[in-house]
Image (cartoon, rainbow, N blue to C red; front, side, top):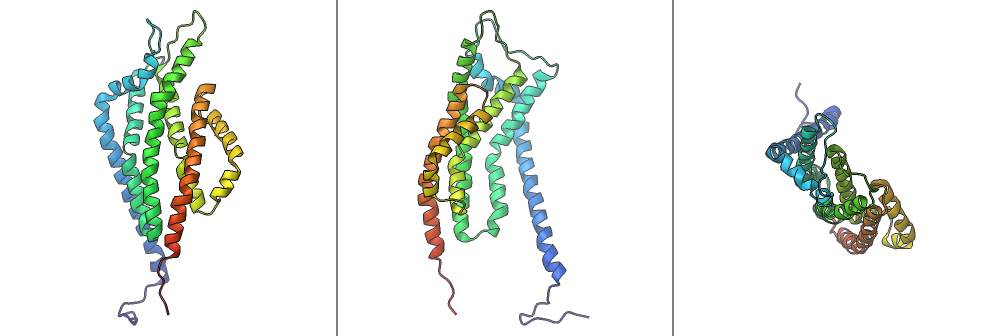
Length: 266
């Protein structure tokens, strides 16, 4: 028996169809987005694999520049000469594919956002990518040379500094991600204010606790030395101040636009 048409001429949807179809559609959309991310990472990985050893030499340059003459890096595991460059190539592929990852994330969540929310979220995604890259670059060009210079000069007399390539890679990647995440502090500050969790005035009032927390985070996220801890904590503090400044302008402007959005009259 055919369904009774509605005033619009379309049949009524059953409750199960209305509830299940959007959910299944969301799952299919999520699967497609994840597949595109995996394909992008795979393509970049295949392009990087032939240059994996050169890529590792580039990452090892800050340490090699400070090693005493006659010393070098070593591989203590049988498979380390292959696995360490391969791991670096894989992490680099994910790192380089981050714009694609963020775009797919944006394309998935954008349909569920209001217009003023889209104008706020998309610039934050773009800025967070740039800040993450800046954090990793800061670690490579500023932090690593200072840290390795300090470590090697503090080595006891008669001790030959010969770092294992796998241990070195783990150490460097930890710093890259620590500084990359630390440079996301302005984005986190803006999001907290935008979500109504806090206000710029409250954050300013709690500045002393924020500074202490930055040094605690520096202690937890970096190797146990004062230099790398300070080099992480100080940028986190400065970026927090930057986030408070822009949260006043950015979130305030978005709120005004949302409040002044025209509404329908009866």
